[in-house]
Length: 146
Image (cartoon, rainbow, N blue to C red; front, side, top):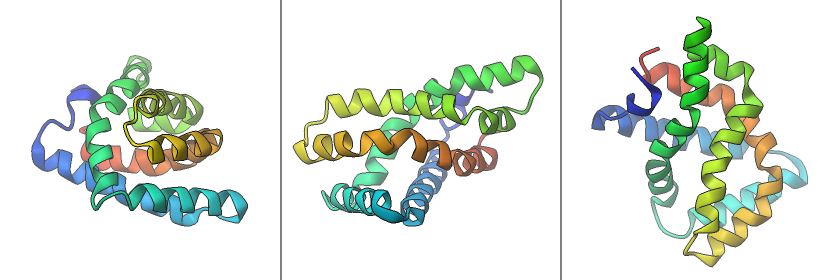
């Protein structure tokens, strides 16, 4: 099964979305220092746009994220390595793949607040996404048939 088709079942997809939202909440909550304050403030602003905004964004990006991760997933299979293990060792590449999707979306954002917040937080993004990769891998292990 490909990663990009792993979450087509509505029940599985909803579980993945919920787990991703929890992962985001947990990662934001763990941030410390001045960078953490900036991230928490930005996340609170974006989350406050309307109830369920983060869940809606995760749902709308899930297919593109899995498509972006597919080359790494396939690379692992070609090497005979568990895909989730391979993703864990490729945190920088995983972050680049995921951020390529969000960069594109942010450039098209209809909300000025979302675009401004993303632009402000983007310089911190790669490091923060890399730190979240183990949690993402746990979500994939739980829901993708690896």
